[in-house]
Length: 282
Image 1 (cartoon, helix red, strand yellow):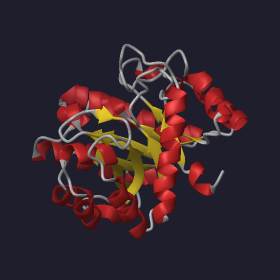
Image 2 (spheres, one colour):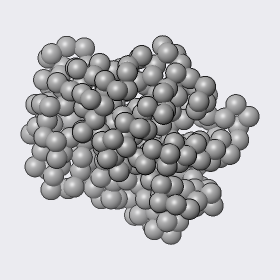
Image 3 (cartoon, helix red, strand yellow):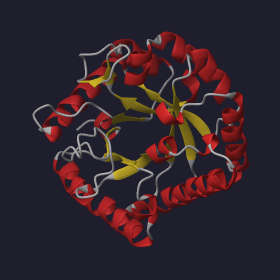
Image 4 (cartoon, one colour):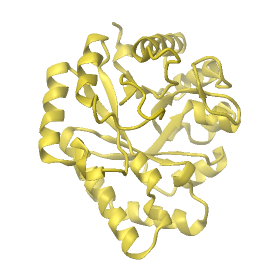
C-alpha cells in the first residue's frame, strides 16, 4: 500500500460491534481483538478513545494495561498516535468548581501521563456538546490550566489539540492564546459540515494550526452519515489541506455500517479518503 494508507487510521471501536447502539464508546469486550482485525485488513494506525465511565479501569490507565497495549501495538504493527478524550467532554473540568475541578484536572494529567507511557503523542480535547465553552470564565479556566502544563506536555512530547463548534474567527482567536508548539486543532470534517462552516474560511483562519483530522460526513444540522452522503465538501477540504502542506493523520470517525459489516465499510471509507488525499496531494 502507498504511504497515504499509513496515515489513514480508525477510531478505536469502529472495528467492533455496536455497543448499546452507541456510535462511539470504548470497546471493553473487543479492544484486544481490534489489533488483530486491524492488522489483517492492513490498518496501521489507531486513535484510542477514552470515556469518563470506568476511567481508571481502562487499560490505558493501568500499568498492566499499558504493558499489554505496547505489546499488542508491536506484535500487530499498529501505531496509536492519538487519543480522543471523550472523558473530557463528558466531565469538563472547565465547567466545574472547587474540589470537583481539582479532581478532574488530576484526571487530565493522569491521562496525559498514560498517553506518554504508550507513545501516544496527540490528545484530542472535544470542546463540543457537553464540553462546549459557554462563557469567558470557562475558556479562561481551560486556558489557564493548560498554560501551566506547557512544560510538562513539552517534556513528554505531547500535543493537545481541540475540536470545537467555534466559528472560524473565534477558533482562530482561541487557539492563538496557546503555544503553537504544544497546542493545535483537530479538524473534524463532518462537524464543520453540520455547522455550515466554509472550509475555505476555516483554513484561512487557522489552517496552520491543524495537527489531526477526523474524517466523517454529516448533514447540515444533522448527525453522522455515510461518507459522501452528507454536506461535507471533501474536495475543498482536501485541496485546502494540500495547500497548507498538511502531512498529519486522517482518522476515520465515520458512520457505522447499517448491515453490521463495520470492517467492510471502514475499508471502503479508507479507500475513499486515500483517493481524495492522493488527488490533491494532501
